[in-house]
Amino acid sequence: MSALKAKHQRLVLGLIALLALVGAGLLAAYALRNQADYFYLPGQMLADPPRPDRDVRLGGMVEEGSLATQPDGVTLAFVVTDKDRARVPVRFSGIVPDLFVEGSGVVAEGRLRSDGVFEASNLLAKHDENYIPRELEDMTKAQAEQIVAETRAADPGT
Image 1 (tube, rainbow, N blue to C red):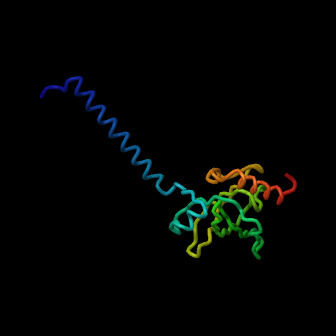
Image 2 (cartoon, one colour; image 1 turned 180 degrees about the vertical axis):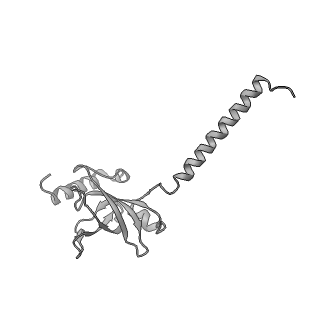
Image 3 (cartoon, rainbow, N blue to C red; image 1 turned 90 degrees about the vertical axis):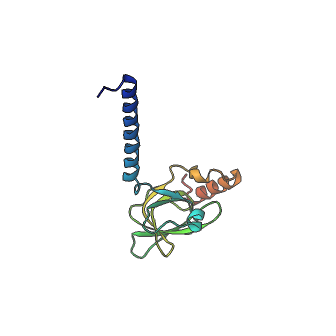
């Protein structure tokens, strides 16, 4: 049996390398399939709710007047809203970021319960008084200014 010509050897090696890359990509995608957190705005979550067993992120603004500490003294209840004024109730037990206040931007990580309440395991709060979640940046300038004004009125120290 004769040896492969150099041209054919390169072709075979190239195909083997391509198959190895495709295999590595599929293996990585399989390993990360449950690690991806999907991002929802309140309107999206109400229109097409995620499965109760899926970890997701809910982003929007903390509705004014909705922040309440539960009787256990540890659990917070509040409502996250978006520019369309869709509302999702949220429950969180844990350490609250210092910058977390009513009227501020928030991203809550957790799961949507079967009763429609979002059970947050982690909260990410705004970093300054001008923060608006990236998904809400397409709102009009007047809407953005109104949210900033409401935030400043709620926290006169800024």
